[in-house]
Length: 126
Image 1 (spheres, rainbow, N blue to C red):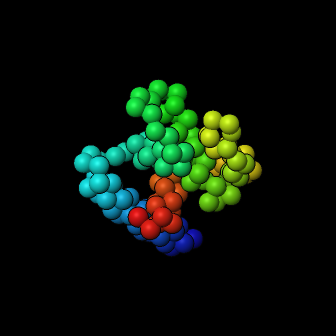
Image 2: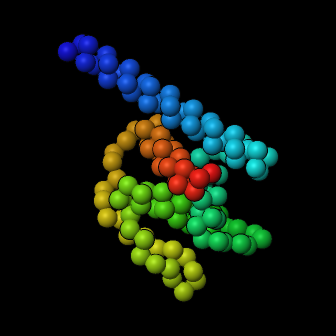
């Protein structure tokens, strides 16, 4: 039994290491493009801008949160957590949650989102 746990831990460590390397590669590409190293929130904000085509000279805190929410729904629809329902009259996309989110620790939740962000950019061939 100890060996099984050990190999699971090793496999888990390898997966985490791979995720981290892929994340650093994405950060490096975005840093090259925008001149600043983005954190997860900034990347979600960028995805929200990309998905909505939102172009305002000044963005309120509420709009920023809305854009990040669109990003989270967009990246998690890839795994069946959300379903795109269409756009409202203001051209904002709307989603319906169709599957419960897994319960994770804060670190695991961050990695869960990072993995989905990486998949999003991979599908864009970025």
